[in-house]
Image (cartoon, rainbow, N blue to C red; front, side):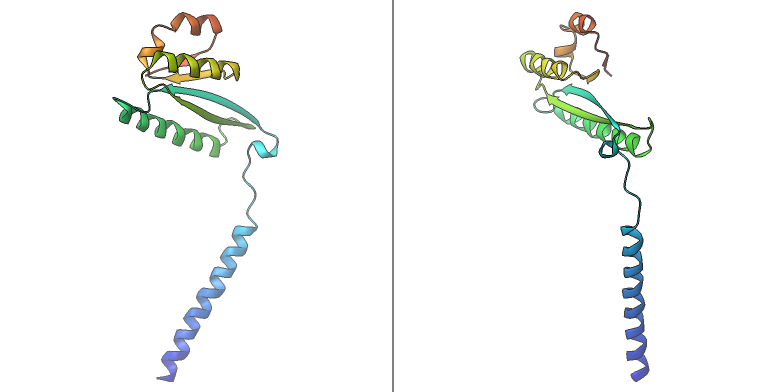
Length: 137
């Protein structure tokens, strides 16, 4: 009976020591590289209808883009550069699309993403005039 109690205490002692050693390794890990260490941040604008009819597909697309950008930054694909995605919900409204576009343009966002045909088709000449590349599916 006494032997089982001693073995049980040893298991807990080994687990506690193991967790302490693991926490020390985690505390000594190098800090992630990113804009906080003097890197450049490049912003990409994403305008699409994330609410309203057909929004479910666009919400999935936004999740995919955000996940890919996180992976892109973690892999340090462009050394010293972090890419951030700023997004705006046009709700399939041309007025909202134009408002978000103008806000992104004023913020000097160099590239935009959109799957919103309500905004892309009538504003195509504006994108060309402003020399802002637009990526669309």
